[in-house]
Length: 630
Image 1 (cartoon, rainbow, N blue to C red):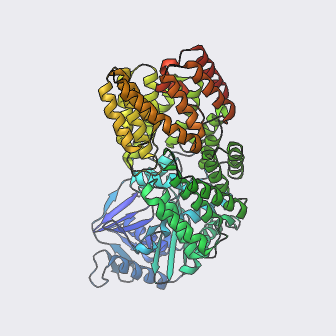
Image 2: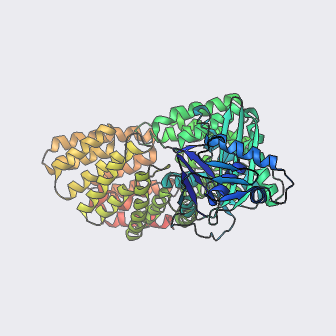
């Protein structure tokens, strides 16, 4: 049997269990698809009524009327005419023949591997066969709910929805390729159709390797009852698979369809990491909590959106601290509403790290992992909150579950940099940068930034100016302004290139890059320090002194807004002035007071510290930093 067939304007895919016309999904029931596939498997030959009844209704006591009705409905879906058939011809009193030319489409050569866990399953987006733009959010909403309900059955290891969506996007929806990318053999494929206030959902559990349908579900009801309808899909799966009834996770619960919709649409906006979408995402979640003030998942989304909004300002001299405070409040509200919601604990952990509340962040991250130990997002957040070996273990666990999550490579490389193990950092960064570039090229969700920038710093510290310039240049190409962290890493890329030009005794080129950096962040003190170095190289001492004065002014502001960063910049000012003892005192105080992790981790590769890096005092600081990273 072929994996798929093409006839006329139609294509039917056995593995995805989907019928399309000119690429658009056609609404048909699982039973009608079974009928169509059976006829196509025997195209051109007579298929008797008895054979069809046995194939479609095995061991069921049904009459010819059921078959006649099914053929009539299938013809209607295909736009066929029984009197002058294009596709299905009736052979009086005997059966049916599929008479149109049929092209068999072989399965892709890349077949899904047999997973080490035979119960791993991926839930694909549900096809919107009615093409109703106002109901488009249900494609993700139903898939998310079915994923959660399947997890509650206790039989399956359900692949994270974000990974599934990325695999679908990469493969164009080809099920065999999705399954191969995720390392699964089982998949849920389905569709929904909204007509007025009603919705019909059909779904099937498929063994991708064989094309066999293991369970079917079909539900129909009022859109207002969407929660019960979605749960019934998995309840029907459970009955067909002989599994016990399940209870849907409480963390999804809200009595309001509009609140549920707002949350679904808000998450879809956040996942783009497009800063232009953040105000709309915040509005979605605010709408949800205004409708249902006890909806924990809505507060989690609101915390995430406010945090992302804060992160877009984190490199400003005066970041939008009020956004971070709101994010913390919303995250704590979510935990208070549902202590068992792992996503709430994980989100709060991520936010508390940025507020330098590290012990609380670690506690929240560990709680999230304890609730959902197989969720890569919580493991990543644990790595984000912790440091040293615990971060490396968390990063390895994250990548074991999600090999293409490039941020995890960056996280691990930070530890190696702090330890002074630049060879290890470079190895990790080159792997991560290759993953990051593939993600960006494919337009995936959660595309990372920063890996080329950090790799550039490592190469510059190793003395390879041209390689460093290339890495910084690649970072600048990728760091689009609309992307979260885009403006920040574009500035870092220009600053890195400037430092590389300074190492190569090209002050004019350095000044050009530094002006580009200052155009993005006008008060950025490290760029002013770079200008001072460049002007000194050109013998322009007055201009250099003015640049250092501007840097001092910026540091005075940072003392109030970002004291950890202020200490790092002050040390760089002292280094440019050649005062290694002052640098050691400043960095020593920083390491004595700030929690291990983000504080000072760039010291071994910081270009503005280079001229004092080999002094005894700074060597001791580097050793202390490495000890903190064990």
